[in-house]
Image 1 (cartoon, protein in one colour):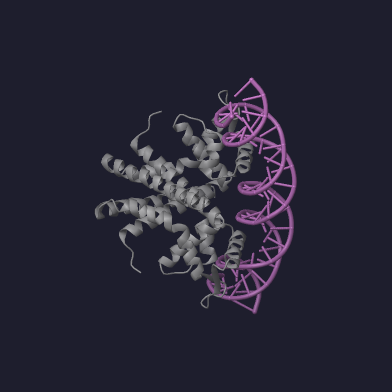
Image 2 (cartoon, each protein chain N blue to C red; image 1 turned 120 degrees about the horizontal axis):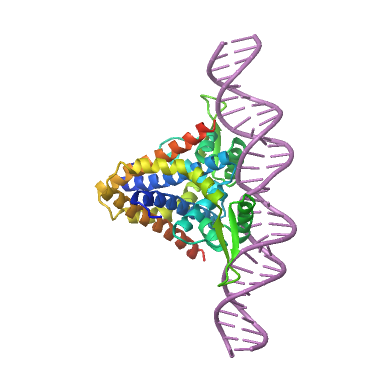
Length: 156
Length: 156
DNA sequence: GTGATATAGTTCGATGATGGAACTATTTTT
DNA sequence: AAAAATAGTTCCATCATCGAACTATATCAC
């Protein structure tokens, strides 16, 4: 049962995802927020970074949650004072989700240690290497999503 | 609000973890098994790859689950015909978890499309590059776990 | 060695995150 | 103008999860 370097890399990617799950689960417990709520914060922060605000539908897709579960999630986040919901004028069915300052600072506190650690690791690499790693991760993300979508469309 | 290549890489790593979560969630739904059960299968397969069999305690740590949740998880997997539990002779408090053939084939079916996709991506790289990427991912895993442990020990 | 303490796993009961079905309100299509 | 599609919510039932308490085994202290 020998393992090629390629297969080893596949397993390392999987182990990285598992370790990330552990981080979220553990940090969520320490902060008294649930896994899903933490992931939601991360996703909304990601949208903000791109300069946009997600809708419940965006969140539903990003977290693979049903519509009712997403509503419940947003209710929780709202009760925590983490988000505001705003009907859009363009299409009055749609709701836009924006973070409060408190959500940003709490979210930062949750993910900061992880980010710091990753930056520390990355700082040991050259700009060219960082560029290379970014290219790879970017394609890995596309690959994971492609594999999922292939599964989903196959089983109709 | 410009973003350095280093910070971008951090975000790509995070997005990779999120995409992996989506894959597990989606594939789990298609196969009628829950997220946690899928992750548990992946972890047990990982232990098998290393030539060992995990205990409930190992699983509990790997999945960040409480002891009762782990027992419930193992009950589910056993009811599905996916695992066997065996008390060890060395220490009779400990239980060893082994997969059935069915679990291996079902687990393979669940993760195969993802693995294939990743292998396809990796095949475009040279052995030296693959080695380099493996090094990086390995350290990233350590970094994530270190960040988590730092959080955990800080909040005692 | 024997009693005290720690460790591995389980059972029990309660909480709450989640999904399916049905609903409202808007927009788009025909 | 009617029909169909889309976005989000409410209601209800299920079940994964945790804390507390328990059993059994192993280790530690003296």
